[in-house]
Length: 145
Image (tube, rainbow, N blue to C red):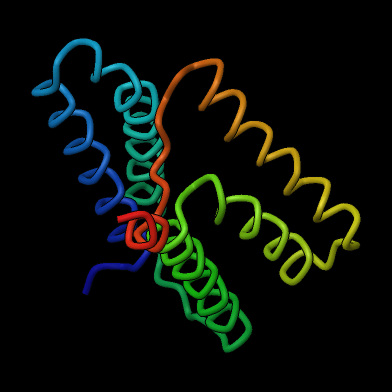
């Protein structure tokens, strides 16, 4: 049976390779953002896959590690669900604040400060300065149509 770390690294490598490959079918103007994200992800996932293949020793997963993995998948599902339903501009800062406060046990003022910073980056850097339209979420789309 394949070790979970090797499988995860392989899946991530395949996702980024597909991401980069598909981006070449886009027009030149639309290709920039997928390549800026995809190429570093492809390189890093390849490094991780090679590292995992070199160190493929059998591991026994304890209950504490399994619990951390379940929490990680829960946060991932929360992030993806929030982005799909409410979009990057709205769900991004909320997820940042919730993650910092509940997972890292940061004070509320730190969590809300990081959320405000992420809102500024998403709204002004990506929206106004770079002019990239961010996905606004299905709920916003349903409410406006």
